[in-house]
Length: 201
Image (tube, rainbow, N blue to C red; front, side, top):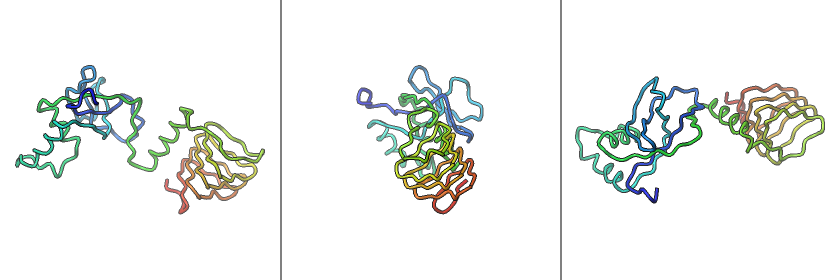
């Protein structure tokens, strides 16, 4: 950004993990954003945009002038609309690419994110001591200070946050157990985010 301070810097990815429909895309030539499009079935080369932008002073000046345009009531619009209008009016946009994008709109999206991060392997660690009778099916992450009972079966795609507890003979997979949440003994838990107040999904 320091080398190109006058551009609007977009971020996006060709690979999306979202189950939610994607509607805003960028069409690029190289790294230059040529057009912002909204479509249910975008062309193959379109990039799913992330709601994250960095901009230089020309973009800020452009935004500051928007209230003076009586025909364009920007107070009721999203920044993506401003970005589209900026590009349509000849502004310069540059794309930075991510490996993937996940639009978190519901609790289930957090389970998708957890699964993906564990599959990548960087977050899959067991940082608490477990009884020898516990069966782990990787990938799993268990934070420090997690209590797990005898005979529990954990995984795959389970994240137990610090301070969580799992009773004996529990079966748990595709779950996130948040801090201080408790899975009662002999409980089976699947595709759930568990809080101290109960399941979210």
